[in-house]
Length: 284
Ligand code: SF4
Image (tube, rainbow, N blue to C red; front, side):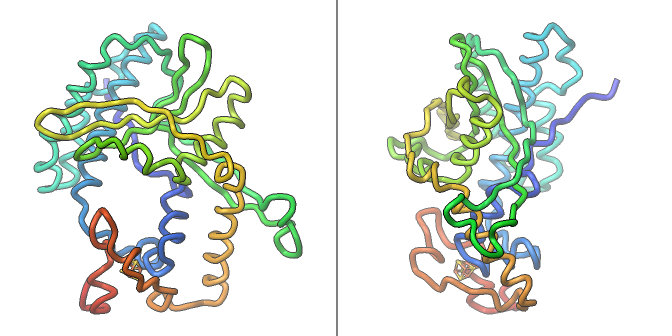
């Protein structure tokens, strides 16, 4: 019997695309039109392998809860090996780190009793301008948006929680606050409310530290009602800019560039397209 290897990749119209455009239109053009400028892929590869491990752990556990055969899915370690192989040398380098973190997580949460509802499932919808901005050409515009939920579970009180795994080098007291205003988590709450109504509990971050001594914590997102309320506008504003540049027929090498010390260089390091912006095509 061939087993299921779950897809944990980004969905095609997800937040990451919108976020990239919000950060810098030139970076958006590099990544999504020219398909270059993805920079240091190390943390991405580590996260991808880790996601696959947790996805197979939760899918197998859901099968056990539903009294179906968990062996239709790969074991987490086997799934991680298969996916790591697709990343070549980087995969080889990060496989032991991600595996160590995932196995520690599974051990730490072995007694968790939540009912697992979704694992790596994609949801999709349409986003429209808020009523007060639905004027002129905007009145009839709607943009598709998608998201892949890492896990949805129902707790013992009957509330549904949507969880996203974040594989990080170190969990600090400030790590969770990084996501308070993130559109990824605003979107999770929009979908959560639409799907589960009053039974929706909220969005949670599953922080997994990848280090010699791995650890993990599950935290709820801090409330940000103003940002949550205006989230459709945030998306529509960016989509409108993307569409205007596309309609203009702008050369992707000439998209608006931030050239901003706070954006080109961040707490995570240099923008992945730093050298391309510095040197042009010879920096690819
Ligand atoms: S280096 Fe700066 S200007 Fe260039 S793509 Fe990155 S953020 Fe934009």
